[in-house]
Image (cartoon, rainbow, N blue to C red; front, side):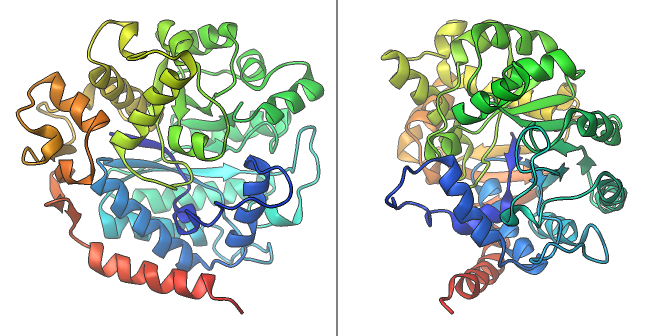
Length: 406
């Protein structure tokens, strides 16, 4: 299973934004708190926190991650001598944990639509086109040193990238994947309409060569027409159900999109909670709450809901991260990335075939996953990552220092 969308460093702030101030609390207020957190981190801190996130991803059943990596500069906003200084520490987290990597360096230039000036909280993210080209070249070398890793590109969003910049950034991916945030919040949709007269997904389909290399992350707020067009493009909708619920973004229109044979993958985004079953369960349960019905996604082709969710996320996730979908699954010549279940877990007792997947997703807990292999190497045994102790201690020390009150 591929995790199509992660900001590894955000694992360190999980649970720290669950209080309400005097004003409305939504994605935009959460983002302000995230800026404060990111302003304090060193590259080493990013590496330590990201390694902890990757340990938990592997323990939760993911074998590969798409790291949507946008913290490029020092806390004052100045470039490091090596433009990929922070990416080096992401790569270190990959090497320590063994997870597969699709690195997605983020191009971020503006604070809003129509080339608005970035705000102070975005100073660690913002690059020029020339700086970003140098960053991509440095990241290509980093990826080349990691077994099985690959490189794509991530123009952050239509809020942060102008049409002209988008046209220049996408070719830097070569044949690799292209990921972009789109239509996550209603406020974003309204701002895009005011700027262009089109909705974010509509604008991308009209003005960018969106195809199977693309992953439109979130795509929460789409019309029926957009659902049909995105599905027909061959691109993947990168869904992050737990983060979308945590931020109050909204509910993805799964029946309309999947009914049009649209591809989807799942991601952990802000890493507030990490696990394959957790994301798939939240995806289905959000549909049930909206429609006041059961087995909404399973009804699309009248099969086990767990199997529809799992197989769909495997297929779409592999495509989104630039993995040949013919190499997924257990077969000769495929990557030896797989998970074994603990049949002694109460939720899996006496289950067989589809009932195993249904019970794993809808009734299971952390005790259901026994082992996880990546490229033939067993990284999780008895539900615990082989380096959990050392990586966990480094994470704890990092968080104690970052969160200490001065």
